[in-house]
Length: 627
Ligand SMILES: [Zn+2]
Ligand SMILES: [Zn+2]
Image (cartoon, rainbow, N blue to C red; front, side):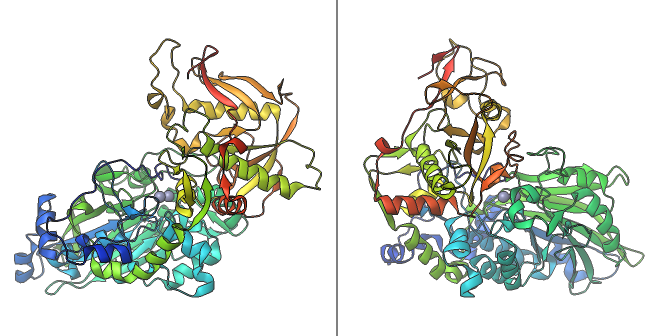
């Protein structure tokens, strides 16, 4: 949960129709596989769809036939990022094909159709394919093969290795989420990958020795031309050391992106490459979601500006659709082209780099990029077939019932109201921590809990609640921890959390959806406490909003100690909340919170809000309740 836009925003858009003709065994196919046969069409359709998306077929074929020294040639570099274990166009939480308001589709099976079309159009020998990381985590498919049937135990090929190998990637960079399941798991996945998995700035602790392959050099052999050598440097995100502290502390460090590139680009250049591409798991905003103790989180633009010798940068992590950005290198005056292909396989970045032979040497003469929308093509049936059995196993798993809910619980208002569904997360966390600390020195302290609205679309239906309902509520692979905070620290913490709201005048119309996400704060950084009572007065400026903080009916004593149940992301400093990263840890059993919710619900059999929903916080304006 470290990127800004990992939340699944399930819009109620109609499911797009891929073609008007019915497939005879469509219903049977859907029943068996959970996938839609209408998704399987041919390359002819894909080609016309690409043309409609603005794709211009290469003029290079004629020039290739002419060949020869002194001529120019255009190579095409394709890039994905933040696939987040989307193998097929499927929404496991909705148990339906993925849809959103913008008409996007997801999955490497779609990406494959675009890649194949471009390879056919340009000539495969003129193309390369890279990824910028966050590959193995993000859907139930990802967590299933990491935690339910871990590939480390079964020896099965990870679906995201099978597909990436089949697609013939040339290099893949490490994202921060690659570290979510620990280093052994990551090593296993890497061992299954044909392509090198790059991360020059992830180093052995206390050294500058890369712990992963830092770069690779691809030699492109285009008939009639001198071979073209492409150096590819891979860089990952410095935030890993806080977001996955428990997995990497003492083993790995992640160095500054810009400084590391300054070290490695000359090394790559010295090997006679004709151009250098960087695949970096870092956005381009220049800002960090954490403090300044760590190197910059979103450094792709700074990298282009400050490190000489880079031609093109494929970047990710921010999940943005950035078809083309030019940054002028401060030292050389050279224009560097950057592109970010959004996330989940919704876009493919396509760079066209033109080289010319000057005195027998290739020189880059132009660079450009664009993003292609994968909704212009259909699923590649070969890619779907590769993961079909694994996908089916996950669909079966997530549709298992775990408990019965006495009523429907919705997270739709969880960003501005105390909801039962979020209180359920807190109830599970309090129960788990309370049992774990029984008999310890902290057992006499009150146990309170923190939860945030990860997914406004989360719902527990009345009646049967399944694992996918729980997974839709708790979409991140966090583990449960507990720390000791004082009353004063909890007040600071709540004030920090309340900056999520705009300042709203007492008489302004009640429009809570427009009051949230102030200062670009994502929903997952609006923490809500259970166990203490408080008001959030949004008529007041940020920093002066928490009123009436009390515990068991009396004002909270600033010195009073509480055991606070909290997820590992927050405890390790994610979101930059005060006190929590330095507070004494009293519980850390590496229990996945989603699994804890499933176990708790199964044991109870019934989910009844009367058992756990306590409206302990509310929004106010000048002391008057908003709702
Ligand atoms: Zn990501
Ligand atoms: Zn990321």
